[in-house]
Image (cartoon, rainbow, N blue to C red; front, side, top):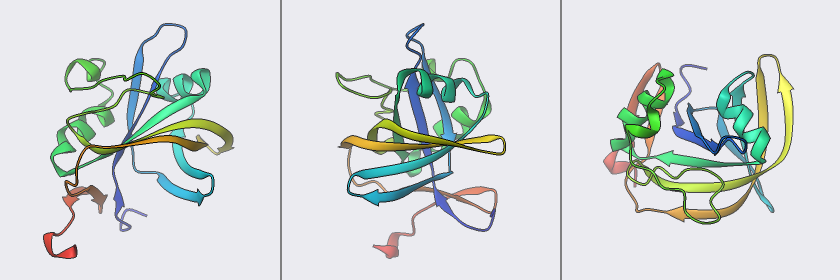
Length: 154
């Protein structure tokens, strides 16, 4: 699947016990339904972000734009200070932190269902709110490298 390019997102949630934000880079993401609008994300079992998603019943999908590559790498690194190193906000009613500088859109989701597949937990989230920050080109990932949407691709 490394040869299949996909968009890059950072999934975020807040641990309901500690109030701590968690997040991880995710390229296992797709839209599965329009009515109700539903997204699917795959997260590693044992991930603290997954634990926060399951504990809170909600998560945000931050769809990154091209300039968000450093943030994609940061949230893929496992660094403990991720939220100290990037701009974010948690507006009223948000399902998780919004990466305001690096995302072109954020989908706030309520957990609708989960399914375990091997070492992954597939989480289905119903989109309850969509926030758009502009029309910057999306960040893509494939063949083990990041790329931007080609300018002539409209």
